[in-house]
Length: 404
Image (cartoon, rainbow, N blue to C red; front, side):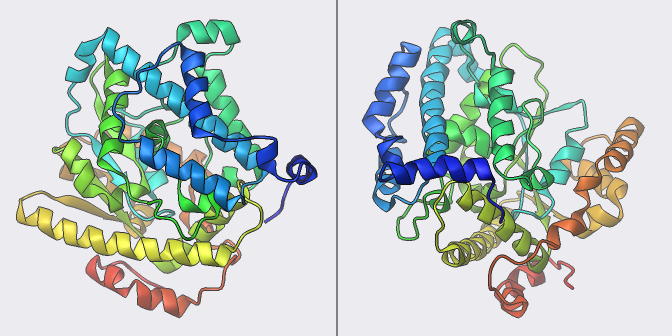
């Protein structure tokens, strides 16, 4: 993967200082103090985040594989998350009725990464009766007007700068995930406010117990953000999306018992090479060159564990009369209108002629969302197709997924 000249030059400064951590130190106590000073607040709410947050920073500094640019970005995200927590708690204190905002039958789109969750999310987001969180809303869910005036930059501008910077780091990322402050974003952006949404590959750590699985605390805070965004606004049905939900459906239903789940499926042999490309971008945008083959093998194992767990939980839910709605990406590819209409029927919603027109127009004007290109990235790892086919046969068989 090509490294931009300005990125390489910046990261060389870390080598010149005997390590990036000497230029950008990351200490969990210091960050907490900075957040308190920056907001003038001190109540972080519950303490459930504290241990994992501290362990993450300890591992980051111990492994010491994060380059200078990576440390700048991680420190920014951690500090922004801390400040958001303080502002969220303060906003709810000032308007306690926020806690009573009902989040009724939210729709969650999930599935393996690179299986069509983004295009399904984009198509359903065209419905004016649905609402999804925008980039600027989750970057600053409890925006501080005084802060904006002082810094002469509002939440929209701040969020767009963060998204633009991410896409500047690698030229190819925009074709895989185009981020904008006014676009709908997935739930991992909301989860950052819980300070636990940082995976092992970001710090090149193959030994710790930092989990890919979302915690109950993350979903509790996820709901707080939705309630704040919904407060004093029209109570539209929420449309949400994140691949990681498939590994945490029990926690999700604990917080959203009437949630409606759309699980989209694609042949892993086609999806996983694209996952590898995106994962390699993620690791290299944070870390000094590391053992990517090992990172990838760990990730594939996580995908297998997640899918096996999801199948068991799906079977348990069916015994209780709860349905997870399954969608084949191949159906969305070949007959998008009929597939979306079927989804509306499953969700008890009305599919309109206006929605049909919007979908046709969107697909015509967004050529980058042609699915077949996602499977044609050059290989970045050694992982034979037959091995993937055998490893995920239980999944393709169970869901009757078309394979090539």
